[in-house]
Amino acid sequence: MILKKRTVFLCLVLALLLVFPFLPPPGIVSAVEVADYKSSVLMDYGTGEILSQTNEKEHLPIASVTKLMTLLLTFEALDRNEIALDEILTASDNAAGMGGSQVFIDAGSEYTVENLLHAVIISSANDASVMLAERLGGSEDNFVVTMNARAQELGANDTNYTNCTGLPSANAYSCAHDVALIMREVLNHPLYFEISKIWMEDFQHPSGRITEMANTNKLLRSYTGCDAGKTGSTNEAGYCMSASAKKGDMRLIAVVLGADSSKVRFARCADLFNYGFANFTSERLVNSDNEILDAPTVSKAKNAVQFKPQEDYFVLKKKGENKDIQINYEFDRLIAPIAQNEVVGKIIVTENNKVLKEINIISVNDIEAKSYGDTIHDILNDWSL
Image (cartoon, rainbow, N blue to C red; front, top):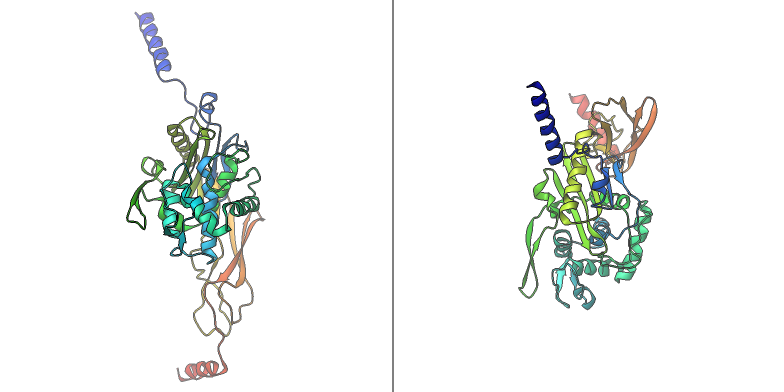
């Protein structure tokens, strides 16, 4: 009787193994899984550290993921006030004639930069991308030169752009590692998040015609914490994606290139996110949004004084790992006047007496110097008290 029970138990175990084959832990890619995509990377946004990688430097076509660089250069031009969101651009015949994904822009019609950004981010519009490229570079070819130069500045050395859209081209390529680097820069721009979260929107043409736009990033609705992403697909590139998700202080960037299907790229990005959030934590130790409250007194200051860090600092840890990180503030001798954004000291981040990072402390506002009359007024005020 006991023998029969053991036989039945073993048969059940074998049956379960056949139905539910062994799955590797999250983040560990099996040989079978690799077959359904060509390359991937998981990056921690805060530190830039790579948490998982598969063929991360392989040169591959990336289809419309190319537009991340088009967006980055547009955001940076906005930051420099070289263009404005309400600036009106006129569509060229070249831009209006783009194939592939588009919002069917009319040649000779006028659209704002903001309209075009929505079209690129939400529906990956090639025609809108070319309009932005022609405005910023004078021509798409000139803009591509700037794209490649910016990629080199970011350390994206395994990338070569030949157009601003990702439409098939013989010598265009990038890699998962480089895409993550560029995505990290794009994520520094709050406007990107504002637009990337929009699920559906109408694109209004001057003629009154409307093109309905639907977001190509399906993870926005299927993965909790995902708030940004750029998809792309062509016959040559397969299905590609760069996406970002955030939980607590930790933001991750997942890149999947050359997937066999749209379903695979979304599933693989979700797998990477799950692995990162399950195994690592990220803490923002220095917050550039926060005023430094215990700053020393500024001599001869007439008005209120505010200082803050120039940039954030994150520390990445494996779950359960302890790190002894020290944060020290060093201020220069502070005497007014001090200009807005002037460097007035530094934050020194150390671990076991080793300097990990030095961050500038800057003035949030202009700090005016007291005049002779102001000084006399203060003395009289103090005396009267």
